[in-house]
Image (cartoon, rainbow, N blue to C red):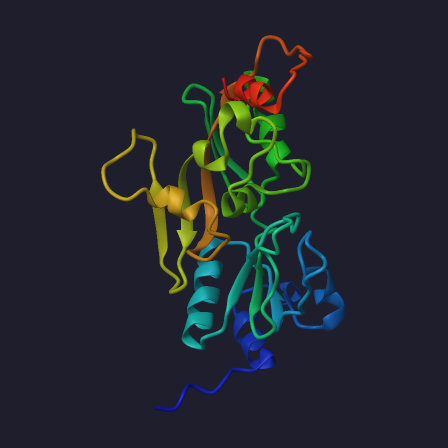
Length: 244
């Protein structure tokens, strides 16, 4: 059985430009250069093209077209990761979620926020500070990294010692599958029986779907923050103290 003929970059771009602003369907090497790697710059690869949709419906159409033509898709947030999770495929599409940058809803009573994946990690805490709240996970790149990338990489930070990783601080994720289906995993309720699909999705680096919305838990800001210095005469004792 013969495999389907490969679609060219020009043909693919032409299809995308029927429903995405042509300025955000990028095919020239100079403009695509910033997308050749993430923070792990020792691994680089130029993609076939880059596309920046701005609605979930556009993401669905991109995924359906790429699935039909067997074209690989790599999702990209801010590109701050250090694991080559956003490294392009030379015969594939980079799907940037940079235009998904809105905070959709904040519920200070339930201590939750509904976000698009391009919202910066630090921007969450800055926005909810007026309610005496903040978002726990604090990667070192939090000034630039996005919540969608945090979900893809299960990001942490120094606060994870107390508050856990991203997987412990999200309630639900809306995502687009490889076939272009729009599904939501997780919910506001307590854990249900069965497979924990939300935990499976978190840290999967985009292999299982493209994140289009995230609902996160918020924490009350501590009344006081104080530095404590302690000395230990063994690594074991220091580890026990941190773990406790």
